[in-house]
Amino acid sequence: MLTRVVPSSKGPDHNAEGTTVARVRPGVDARTTVARRALLLAAVLPALLAGCTVGPSDRPAVLARDGSPRPTTETPREETPLPPLGTQSGDQVPWSDCGQRVRRALDTPRRRDAGTMRYSCATIDSTLDAPSLPGRGMLRISVLKAESGGGDKIPLLVVNDIDGEPGTVFAARLAAQLPEDVLEQFAIIGFDRRGTGNSNPIDCVPPGARGKLLGFDPAATDLDPLFDAARGAGQECALILKNQQGALDTWRTAGDLDEIRRQLGAPFLHVLARGEGSRVVQAYAQRFTDKLGRVVLDGTPDPSQQAQTVLAERAAGAEATLDVFARDCRSRDCPLGDDPRGTVSRVLDMPHQRGLPPGIAARAILHGLGEPDRWPALAKAIAAAKDGDIRSLAEFLGPMDPNNPYPSVLDATLATTCNDTRTRLAPQRIAELADDWRQQHPVFGGLLAQRLVWCSQWPVRREPVADPAMRGAPPVLVVSTAADPRTPELGTKRTAQQMPSSVRIGWEGAGHGAVGRSDCVTKHVGEFLVDGTVPSQGVTCPS
Image 1 (cartoon, helix red, strand yellow):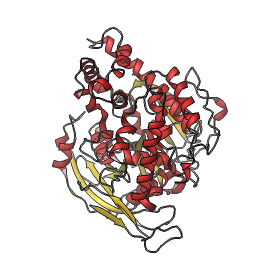
Image 2 (cartoon, one colour):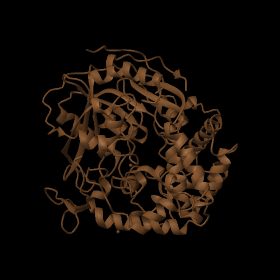
Image 3 (cartoon, one colour):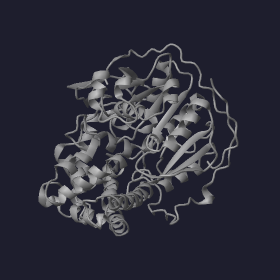
Image 4 (tube, helix red, strand yellow):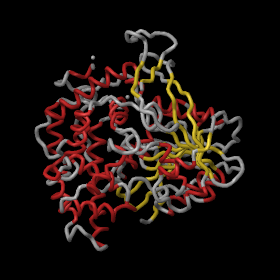
């Protein structure tokens, strides 16, 4: 089925028909204490010139060994009042019950029976706002509301990583992990980010290129086949998406977030973002500063605009999380023996002989490291793969798996990631970085270096990127996790240092995201959201 987005008039860079066409898969539609405190620390293809380096220096930043951010990046503190929760009025969203469907989508709920939650779903219209057609076009955004108990609730929007599960499913899952006092005050609102789930999901990467991008061997030194796959993906997506191609980014997703807030009748945006989803909120803060309410960022990417810096840090964070996983496994009846890390490395050398491409196996393990409650199952899956049974490990690939119940997020991840950065490196430089990262981060360095190839054939962003400092924002609660394979603690600390109104809580645990995993962190977050209680700077929660 083709969904055609027709702007009201043709812009200067319109295509032959003045339209945007995207392949869409059919699917499910998808009081107050005012705290004033002094707070501390606080963007055929132009890039096809494969031999050119575009953007700032590609020299990777030196990561501090002790995990402490550099004091030179500190932004002067600001004192900004935390706004009241406000009163919701005039909810215009056409909600309908979707409880049965949502419960089928959830696995074993945590903290409460999912049967006690009420789920409503809807779709709303938002503006496409492509670079060549500013303020024009339309797309559909799938939204979900999860609430418990009676009475009117204040909306609390949640934002997931672009390469995570659909935001509506993420919101339903997170609602089951939040404390009762939060659910007494708030209705949890999730949305599928543009291009994902049931929000005009894009499907533009050819199957052959998709398999190569996901399965390419992280140990391979010849990256030419990967560049060919990236070129094929970029060319096909340009043909299919047309002017929609540049509209898939966090800046415009922030516009969707405000459209949801407006249709909910909420005077302020109260929001909890996980991981890369924090970038959507950072863009929102720059576009709609006066609408910001209570903001929680549960892990944030490094604020650097150089993709190689962010990815190198992710590789280091993934290796550190693997070490914690190995220690945890040894503390139990570990099926991976006395050297779990060594077993992982051996398994990654085997899958191509067993029917599972090495890149798929590495991505599955990386995804599993972000979910510590599933670590025992991950250890068993790795052990089974060592013995030739790859089925359990393949299941850990998660939303990237083309066989998962939702449209694969690879296409939207590729588009959003590449549209959010100006970094385009020459093939030789990428090969050098990949060799270096494989030495420093032997399990995940080569895998994450491949992300630099993914964007090498994508148009270079010409618009400014959002300022991560969120200047003018009220107090922002930033949560860092000691061993996070996707948004490492060091990057989160650096982001917090650049934010004048941030207050950071550190969790000494492991996994991607602390809210709902750490009782201590969840308690502080709940008090901040419900009562406006801003914790002390640098609070540390035990693992």
